[in-house]
Length: 348
Image (tube, rainbow, N blue to C red; front, side, top):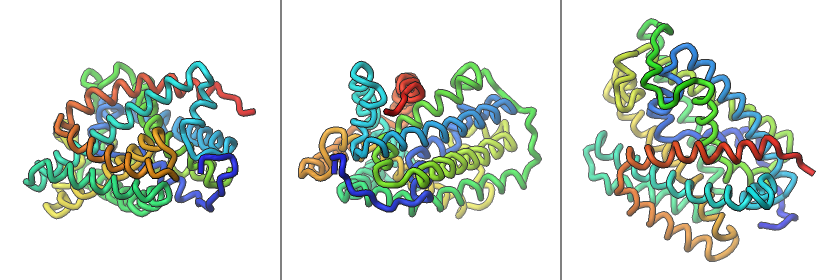
């Protein structure tokens, strides 16, 4: 599977887009907190930041998948080595590998938090469910990962758009609200750039090998559809938060608060969607981490998958907020090196 002559599957543009969306969205995205921190606090200028992020998702996603196509490799490590060269390739690879495990642990811990806060169940149950589901999915290989994400993503988009449109219809949209002093970063261009940096770095271990499974037209169209899906979903969340601000912005999980305005059942369903979004990110992170350490067609791959999933379960006890506050910003800064190398890369 790792050679130049890897057989290509007929992966459609929709599957490419679904996988792109599924690996980027997660607990932070669906909760609305991530969109609030990076875009919402800037008010109207947050829309400019979101437009910048969507454009970068398209351009960078298309390029990294085409590099994967040209190399014909199923290992993202070799694609990153091609982009970074001998000097930057190895450190970028190991940095991404380290952060992938951190993101996996964050997703497992986030599921525990949802189980505790929304379902009044022990957080260890949530961590066990997510670690187990992710481990079993990745155990079956990249094909099952792609299939699982492709099935889940349409429901994610429908839920985000549905709840967002409800908020927009229930309250007047006042784009004059902003609170830039509360934003994670000092200005919207930097905020949009770092948002893409850590999310795209997280998606690369799945996007790069997918380049070897589809033709260039499907990859290009899939990158465009994926960027549009991410942009429109984030726009719905952003406008819903601004429409309900400052009350909505004060909530720990803004979109869950918006869903609760519809009905308790809607809040429960959205909580389940949150778990589903976490699942798509978790399996992408787990696959990327394990495939860095062992080829997918080796027996070691499956053993490592189960061991890493179990490790994430135990590491998840550190807590969701603590992991996110530490891993996400560091990953965004480190990811800038990879983005710069990708932009400057000229395929042979």
